[in-house]
Image 1 (tube, one colour):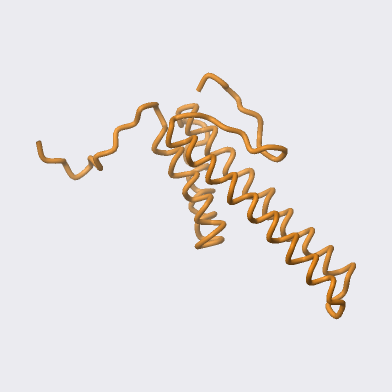
Image 2: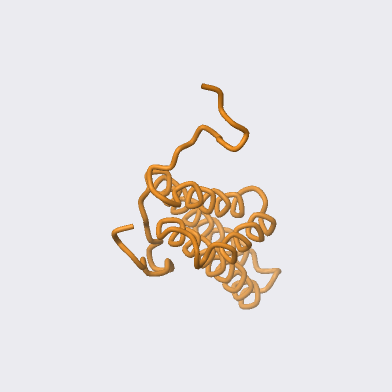
Length: 139
């Protein structure tokens, strides 16, 4: 049976699973490939679907948007603090800054990959420490 133009050959096992996967993919694209642009798309999705999406998609949209904001705040604020306190001329400022940025960024990417796997399996998941609470654990 031929596929129609609006059928991409992917069926959702749970309501909102495709939107959850898209949210997590945009989160990773924001971190790795197109920062800013991917966040704008993610934020637009969150604004559009924050009240109407199924619970699974709503949780992943909420999480990716929130963690993107908190992660960006952590990276820019603490990096600025390290630069301010250490100064541009001190070589240890750069060692600490690069280590800090690498560790935080890598952790956000790793957790984002795990969240994408969970979304692909139709499950909710919460980022440790900075992730928002799961509204409905049964989703």
